[in-house]
Image (cartoon, rainbow, N blue to C red; front, side):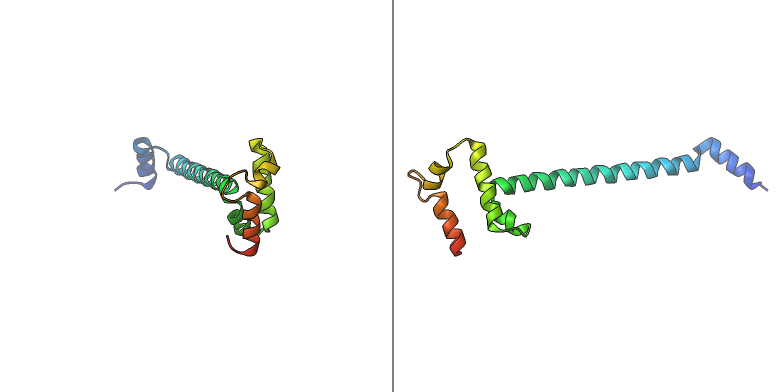
Length: 110
């Protein structure tokens, strides 16, 4: 015959404090969730940055914004490159200029 208090005391000596173990496991689970959320947020930010640079019209549409916002993103990219916006708009030997591409987008060709 064993007394419950004696069994609990012996289990605590052999295995450690159950409440401390449960609390530690809960904190570890919360830390894993926090890291996962931070990783997902970083991936979303990187994806958005890529879309803003490489597909501004698709990004504007995805976010429910207008084509004017996409044009603004393109203008900002042109400014960041240090190119003269007039040169980029006219194309200088390119198959078609940015201006023509934007007109084609507005007409639904692109």
